[in-house]
Image (cartoon, rainbow, N blue to C red; front, side):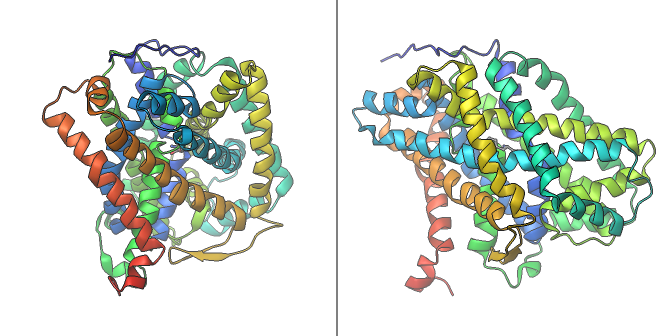
Length: 470
Ligand code: PFF
């Protein structure tokens, strides 16, 4: 049966626009802010290696499945899941997948916006030449001054949410398309310049070794499953924007003719490259200036300004860098709210503007918890062998990326490979029925679900309980 639905929210004007928009969603703070600090907290090369395996074995097949479901359903994730489940004669409970994704998007955006607010603050700080010739102590002090000031954090969080809401209200496709076309390549070039700077630092090779040498001795006091594999898997979901319907809704605007597999590989490649380049730019600076790799969420905001303060035209490059990082965060933020906005438009008969205002205000309010996590409400706890110091923010982050997104991904894989008819997936993926299709099917049927389940079982200690591992 061939399904020809169209989205009431519109369609991308070409395949490249989809690739750019989806890359815009994938590339963001996750690559440049989150990836390096997780690498630093989790012992370097081994984490990077496991992360890459998670992207290839679990991330890409699930991304293909998620886009496929979106394109076939052509509605908000909740309604897409309802429609596709009904088509396969399955119950409405599959809609829960969409609901969970929508909630995950809300929570992620609530803290994502606060961190994007730091980026906004750093545009002005670097622009004012504040970091010229500074040392690590000064840079650290500047960062803690920012996060200890809830009013400043609140103000920047508000500005960022307002910026995101304006674009979402206008519709993802107008405005965003043009911005992404120029700004993403510009960010890439700037990262290359940063890598060039890092190559000239004294401890460049130490940084490279830290990043690429999977030295398991560094992980002596860590549990491989719960402390390395779980956060690496979570980061793969977070960075690729999968498991919560963001890429599903983008898929729903994709033309029927476009190749899902080609698109996915391109997006995943670009996303991974940006994360690795960010790592190459950051760790040599960390070691050269005697900073701690496990510096936590402040890592890039402490290290990069030192480098900008030293390099020729550093004030210019630094300001530009934070502006482009802001754009990268912006294009991701938009995709985090899009599932909720489309659902409100479809089900509550709201205009886009009203839906965006309502959803945006709710996210903004929730963001207040993150604002206070770095100061008044700060408390610490231990996760993945690391002490996390920023209470609710860390809990939101851990719960969404390490639990909600992988569960979302698991359900997507189960639906696409076990519940949907084979012929429907053959038709929708357009890969034919040969080797490529079979490889994809094997990956979503077995590797991805088993990967997620094994990581979970280990992380919650079931294997230990049963005596399978020490
Ligand atoms: N992938 C984005 C990043 O790496 O910054 C964050 C993100 C966007 C996560 C959309 C999840 C999502 F659905």
